[in-house]
Amino acid sequence: MKIGITGASGQIGWHLRCHLAAHKEEEVCLAGRETFSDSGALDRFVSGLDVLIHLAGVNRGPENEVEQVNRELADRLIAALNRTGARPHLVFSSAISQAHHAAYGRAKRYCSEQFSAWSQHSGAGFANVILPHVFGEHGRPFYNSVVHTFCHQLAHNDSPVIEQDNTLHLVHAQAVAAELLRAGRERVTGDLEIAGTSVKVSELLHLLGRLAGEYEQNIIPDLRDPLTLALFNTYRSYLYPKHFPLDLKRHSDERGDLFELVKELNGGQVYVSTTKPGITRGNHFHSRKFERFIVLQGKASIRLRRMFSDEVLEFIVDGDQPQVLDIPTLHAHNLTNIGQGELLTLFWSHEIFDPITPDTIRAEV
Image 1 (tube, rainbow, N blue to C red):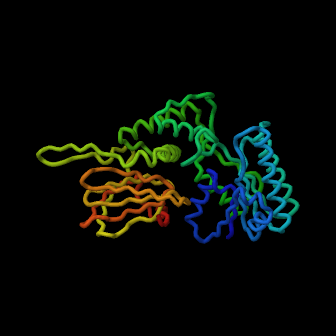
Image 2 (image 1 turned 90 degrees about the vertical axis):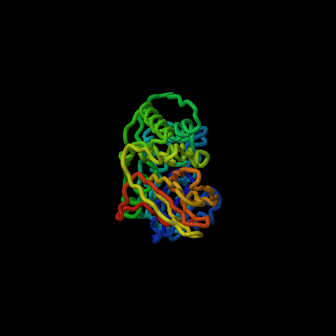
Image 3 (image 1 turned 90 degrees about the horizontal axis):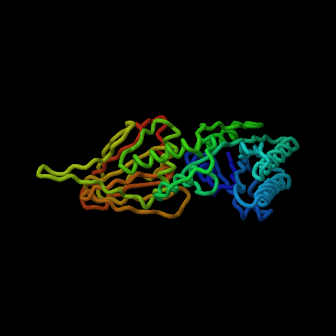
């Protein structure tokens, strides 16, 4: 299947690409801003697509600009489909605000109507996916989600302020990615409204504050609730990389040394590996799993790369100085023994390994 994605560098687009990274059998084509400014490039992009997921758009800015840009993107996309005769199953990321009279809502409503009309005229399928309040790792603070703003502020020891204690309907971007893909693969048509979890802004801030406070004390919160896990992983993304590695307090006496590796409130799994000199483990990423590394003996290089980024960060850790590295979700990572002797590493994850849904996706750092 050949899937086209517009707006692939945005929050949902990046999460969608991460989600697709586990499905190598599908060909993925991307359209950025430069594609929409060149009709020839846009024609080449839409040609031969089986599914087209349209995420490109503007969320914030002057009202006339928000409305105009979103309308123009839809119009240009339809024009390219008509010029080329392409008939992919079209999936559009609309929003619950499409029923509102503000510029963003009007723009979303216009796009939905135009895509629906194109679908009826062309005979191609169209799914209008109505999204609630979407959040996720590496979202842009002070832009499209108060979750991102609060996480950024708490990670930088700022004091968040509640302007309006509205009710939010929260859904993680990975869940949205799964539904967008399902709509394309299963040829869903018509309105598809994604449900979110209802949370007041004050409740959200209280929960994020508790998660941040527990983590600051080296306590892993209870992560059995999916929303709590998603919020915690989102918060952690704003701590990386400056927050790591974390030094552990060593308690020493005549008997030897002791340090506390994990203090957790929900369970999980501990496992240990030995690694021979020069050998590398890993080269994969996780979409939900919280994983902690600590070298007990030897010297290691731990390298991480945010998915679809070229930047690789390296952390050198040594068993002589106990430090932990908490692996951020949606980052490819590996561990290499750079010492002369055997490397002894202890790992902890918040969930017991399940071979049916291992959440371990191959990706070279």
